[in-house]
Length: 137
Image (tube, helix red, strand yellow):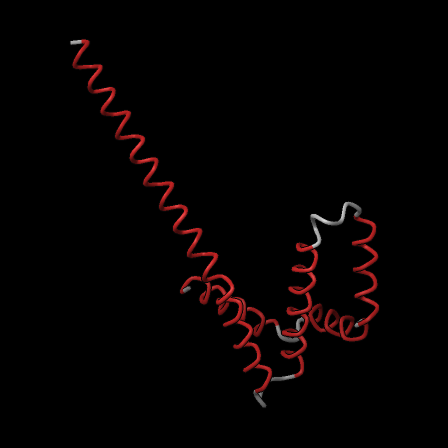
C-alpha cells in the first residue's frame, strides 16, 4: 500500500510540475504578445486622433480635449521615464508648475469648460468608445 501511495504521490507531483510549467509558458507568451501589440495600439489611437483633428466638423472643444489628453500622456510618459533617475519629488513638482505656466491659458479655459459640463455627452461617448476599442483589441 505504501508503494502504491508513493507512486501516486510522485505522479501527482510530476503532473503538478507539468501544469506549472505550462502556466508559466502561457503567461510568458501573453506578456510577449502584449509587449509587441501595445505600441501598435497607441500608434493606432494616435492616427485616429490625427484623423479626428483633421476633420472639419471637429469642434474646438474636442480638439482642445484631444490635445490636453496628449499633453497629459506625454507628461506621464516623461515622469515614468525619469522615475528611476530622480530621487527628489520637489523637482517633479517644479516641472509640473512650469508646464502649467507654459500653457496656462489653454489649460484654464479647458478646465472651466469641463467644470461647466459643456460636452459631457461627448466625453461619455468618447470614454465608451475607448473602452470598446480596448475590449476589441
